[in-house]
Amino acid sequence: MLAALAVTALGINCTANIRPRDASPIRSPQNIHSWLSERFAGLDIVEIGTRNGDGMACFAQTARASIAVEIDRPYCEILRKRAARLARKGTGNFTVVCEDYRKVRLDGDIFTWWEQAPFLTNQAAIQHLRREVHAGRVRPSAQAVVLFDMSWQDDVDSLKQLISQASRSRLTLALPLTDP
Image (cartoon, rainbow, N blue to C red; front, top):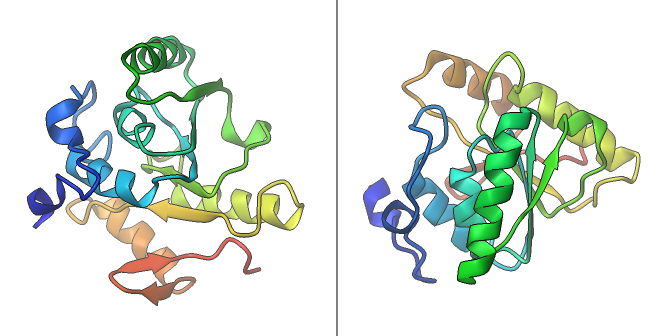
C-alpha cells in the first residue's frame, strides 16, 4: 500500500528522485516523505532531528518554507550543502538551524520528526510544542505530524502513550498542540 503512495498528485517521487543517506528506521521511509510532501505543499514546515536531510530534501520541494533543525554539528554542514544543491537545481530550499529545538524559537504550520530516543521523544517534543503554543511563540494552528514504525516496540509504546491524547481524523491521529 505504501508503494502506491510514492508518486503523488504533485508528481513528487522522493523514492526515485532523492538519494537517501540514512536507512530506515533511522529515518522515515522515502515513500512516506513523498506522501507527506503533497500534504505539506504551501505550508511552513519544521523538521526536528533532520540528520542528513532525506525527508527535508523531499518536503522542501513543495513547502512554502522549510526549516531543518539539527543538534549535531557534523550533520549541520551536510544539511547546508544539501540545501545549497537543492537551491542551485531549483528543486527547493530549506534553512538549517544547528541547535537544540528546545533552545531556539521556531514557528511553522507543521512540526515533524522521527523519534530517536532518548534525545528526541514524541512525548517530550509534543509537550515542548504545546508550551510554545501557549506562550504565543508557535501559531495556534500548528500541527505535529508524528510517524510510527509498528515493527519497532519503542514506536508502538510511544503510540500507545499518545493515543489517549489524540482525536481520530480519517486514518491519522491528530494531536492538537493547543490542548492542555
